[in-house]
Picture 1 (cartoon, one colour):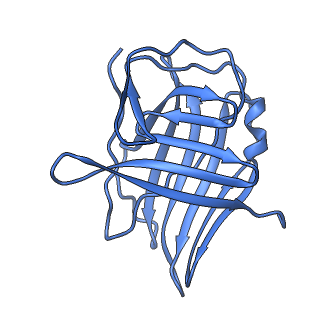
Picture 2 (cartoon, helix red, strand yellow; picture 1 turned 90 degrees about the vertical axis):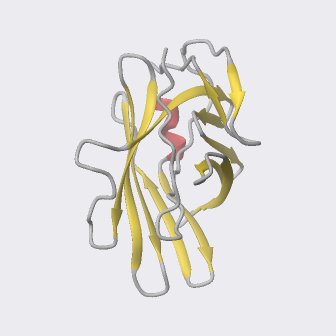
Length: 184
C-alpha cells in the first residue's frame, strides 16, 4: 500500500490547522510497519478502515483556542453514515485569517481526513481537485493517529500534533490545544 501523506506547510506565517478526534475501538485493519515522523506523529504502510462512525459523535460541537487577539474555532456536526464534516476558522483581532472544510470518510483503502483551505476571501489554497489527505493509522481510546497528524482528547482538552514539512525536507512538530466550548 503506498503512503498517501500529503505534507502540510506554513502559509503566510499561519499554520494550517487540522483538527479532529477519533475515539474508542472500531473494526479496523491492523497496523504494522510504523515509523516516527516527529515525537507525536507517525507514518505507516498500513491503515485503518472504519465501518461505523457513530462513536465519533462525542466530537460534535465547538472547540476553541484563544490567544490574545487571535482565536481559533472548530465545529463538528454529528456523523451521518460513514462521513463526518467539520469546519475550522482562525481569526485575527478584526478579521478571519483562513478557514477549512474538513471531511472524514472512507475510500477503498482506509478512513481518511480530507482538508480544503481557504483564505479570508474564500480563495482556495489548493487547486480545484487537490486537498490535504491524512490516512488513519491507529486508534487507541480517545487518540487518533493519522499519517503526519495525531489527535488526543484528555477530558475537555483536544491536543493536535501536526508534522509540518520544512523547506530543508525535515519536519517540525506543531502542537495545538483546544478546549471544548460548553456553551454550544
